[in-house]
Image 1: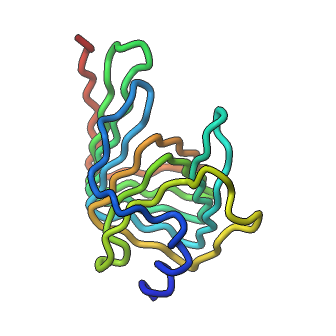
Image 2: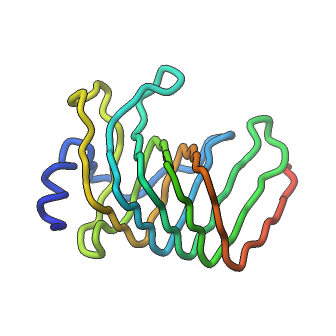
Image 3: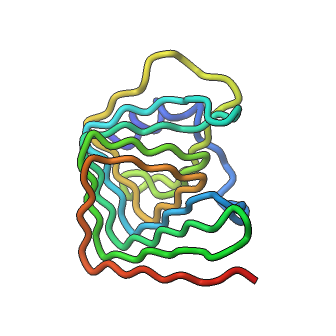
Length: 156
């Protein structure tokens, strides 16, 4: 399954493994394990830039650290949770997604400059370990968390 999925995602995969620091206003999610169920992956335009869009029935995030820096350089919020479960429909948009696909294949997914096809790639599930998602926007009907804490650090 991992090999077939990687072939389908090939146009979005980059060889670069290290991501640059986040820009002000970019949401960043780091997770020990990220599982999307009933997922469609496509490329959409966001503020004149291409981004990846993942539409899923449910998303499960284990070992979550969600950082949302202020656009103006003010406070940065960090949400920590041992588990987050988002139920849907769920939509995740991102500029870059890095992790280990199905626990075996290290990948960095990026939106190409132009859409590849109009139709999305449909998969029954996608699982990544050591995931890092940049340029993050998420929407869900419901979010349930376990061991959740929120910290706010003022900007310098």
